[in-house]
Image 1 (cartoon, helix red, strand yellow):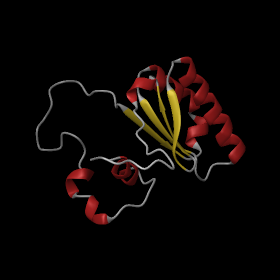
Image 2: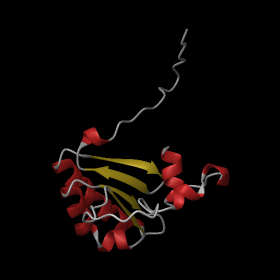
Image 3: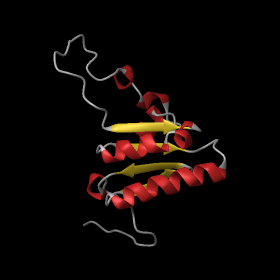
Image 4: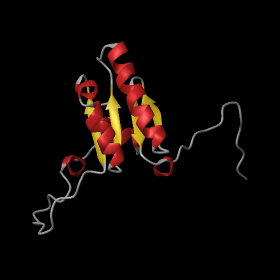
Length: 129
């Protein structure tokens, strides 16, 4: 699932057969009109130098309860580190978490309970009988 999300965001490569046209449609595009007001996005994706320029806006998104993905590839290392340090400070103050999900790509949440990390322990063989 994370691989599909990263591929849709253009962060990683994915086999084309995993993506369907339905994956690329905006939510609610089935021809139905919504009479309710538009909702705020649950996820903010920021790519490139704009992440450095709008780090205060990213911090505000965290304060509003949104999850952010920051893609700092192709950003000067010093500027990118400064922006990441700022975002980490905001997330920490909110009891959130920042984790690297790909080289120079980070996911930040305002609450550590919004993300579960499931990973295989290195060097441990699991035997399910």
